[in-house]
Image (cartoon, rainbow, N blue to C red; front, side):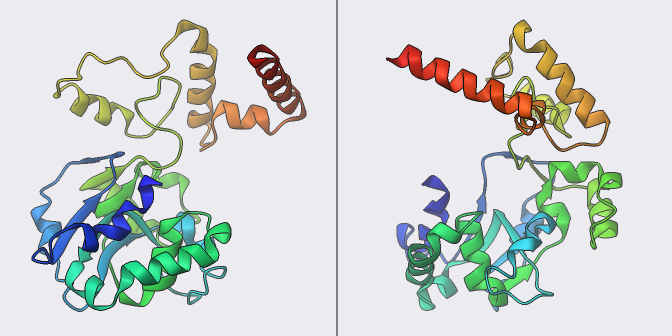
Length: 243
C-alpha cells in the first residue's frame, strides 16, 4: 500500500509547500538534483521520465496511442496545481473504480488521469538499470535517446525484481550500487540471501544476463513443466510442515 503514499503528498504536506521532488527508494543519484529541481512545471501537474516498458498499458488506460507512459519512480510534482485540481480525490476515485484492472498500481492511475498535464523529462533523470545496456533495447522507438542517457545517467533506477542488494541478482549497475553502499554506514552489509547453497542460482542468473536475458533463473525454471512440478511440490511440502 505504501506505493500509493505519493498520491497524498498534497494533503499530507503543508499548503505552503507547492513543489516537491519524489524519489523511489530503489535508485541511486549520480548527478546534481538541482538541475532537475529547476525544471519549470508551472504549466504542468508533474514532470516525469517515459517508461518504454509500460507503453502497452496505454490502450487499456484510455490514453492516446502516441502519448508517453511515464515511470512514477521519479516525480517532480506541482502541489499547487495538484490541490487546485483536486487530484488526490480524482486519483483515489479512479483507483477505487479500476483497481482490479491496474497492473502498475498508482503508476497506471497517474498516467491515465494526468497524461495530458505531464511534462516529459529526458531519460537520464530516471534511467532504469536495464537501460545501461542499450544494445539490448534496439527494438525500442527511443533507443537512440536511451543510449545517450546511458552514457551520462543522473539517476539509476533498479526497477523489476532484480535488485542489486540481492545475492543472486545479475543486475546492470550492480557494481555502482555496491560502490555507493561502501560509502555508507552499511558498507559491511552482505548481499541479502548470500549463501554458498545458492551459488548455482547466482551463476545461472549471470549466465542468463550474459546471454542478454532479463529473466531470472527462478522465472525460467517456473515457466517449464519441470519447474512447475518442483514449485508445486515445494508449496505442498511447506503446507504440510505448517500443519
